[in-house]
Image 1: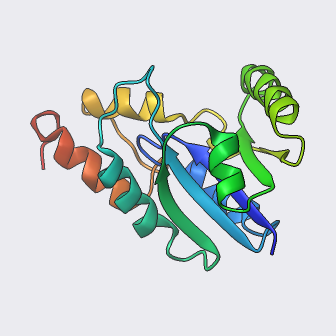
Image 2: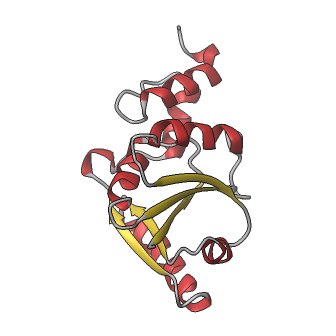
Length: 163
């Protein structure tokens, strides 16, 4: 069985992420969407909330499993039998960062391949950071996040939205 992992903090999951999951899931038998904590980020949603939003917004993709993870990605991948890391790229700056990470991964775990999937142009400007900022100030989120995630963001920042 070909197992892939799409790792990230997903705080929150965006339509761009969902597009990458849908396309990436066609490349593997099972795609694990692994929610990792990032010590350099201050999340808006808890790990459990992010997992729940991912489960809700990916339930239409039959071969996806959502899990939380900690520690090193290579160790997590090997412990789950995964040999493919799937990463979405929006811009050249993403490529530079992800390319270095892929080279490091190849150095420490030669059995793991990294596959880059280019973002759909309609989501190339969407980032979780930008979504959090928009939500924090009560901005419009139309078409950038799944409806369920938009509801959760509006509830989280309810003082900014006229509901």
